[in-house]
Image 1 (cartoon, rainbow, N blue to C red):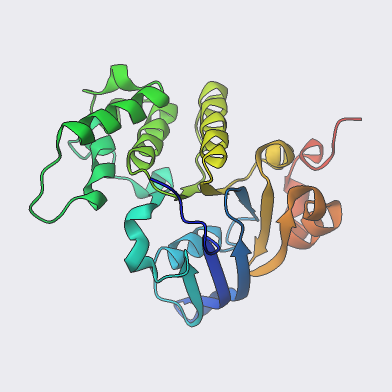
Image 2: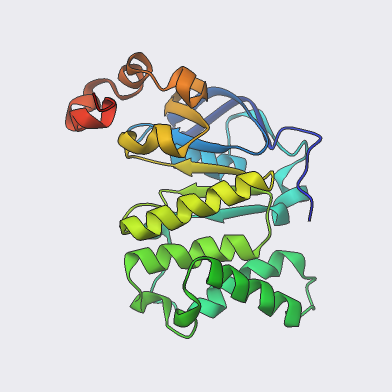
Length: 254
């Protein structure tokens, strides 16, 4: 299907979110460009996952307006795919790789509709794209960390969404899987689709992302990576936590 082109994939105005009366996000304004790979960067507790969940309508917000492709999220949910953090998944659930990937087709079906041959082929192709078709009958808890991440990205791919949210997709994966995921994201970009990625490795930001959101409860900076991913903005984002990051992550090789 053709992606939406008429409006920004995500338009956020004045978003604020609190947990247990503690403010987590304050007065966020963002307008994400179509067909880009966007890194969401910031320290632990910065509100990165909260930003995703607010846009997806998974949590209550204190203030603000959020539009996804110019509409409320409920009106376009089937066109939006979400890959949660690994800690948010019950890996003991008795589901196979195929079961999970085929779940990506459910948003396109009515209440009483079953998956059909076309749905099965789309799911198989998604598994093939992430090189996990040979694992299709394995229970998800039996897989390695990298394989598990590929399963949930395959599910998102099978959904044929236009907008993708990946929350820390590179945690616990090997370099081969990381390269495979980036290759896939670049392919999605070439199709006019948009991806937001929560990411921690500052050394790869410049090579992975077209735009970056620098976040620490407030929006520090947002824009093209070459414009806003600067030492000054990184310092403003991480503050006292900066000293725990490896120095080479913040500097280009000389």
